Image (cartoon, rainbow, N blue to C red; front, side, top):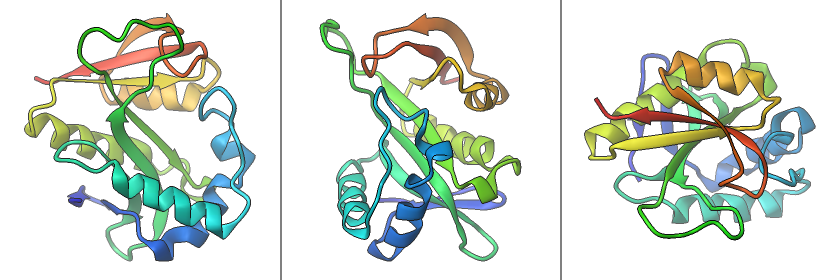
Length: 176
């Protein structure tokens, strides 16, 4: 899996030695509360290692789930994903599969613009590799992620229940 650089960050593949950071990140309710219809806390290192293995399995020429690190010192700050999004039960599966972008960062890294910078780098990379459309879905109460979507120039398409079996605000970005 490739790495994606930005001015201050590096998106790189997850490594087994990142398990303690991932467990810490996803053991925090304030981080996972908006992830999916039934958010769950990660409680042990074994779950983190299994999650890292699943993240590695998603990698292909466009899609992936990356660890976000600072370029200056390699400090882990969060997670960024670009992958096919699961449809809600009963949604028609005809047509192309939508690709979503998403992020979650450690609270110590909030407020520094890292989510926007990492997502912008991943979008630029995906579009340069032929992806033509990327969506983001956010919990209706996740105003911080909605603000990131707007800073990325994503268009708000309204509320949808098409994904994750839960109501979400839908945003899209088209390749230029």
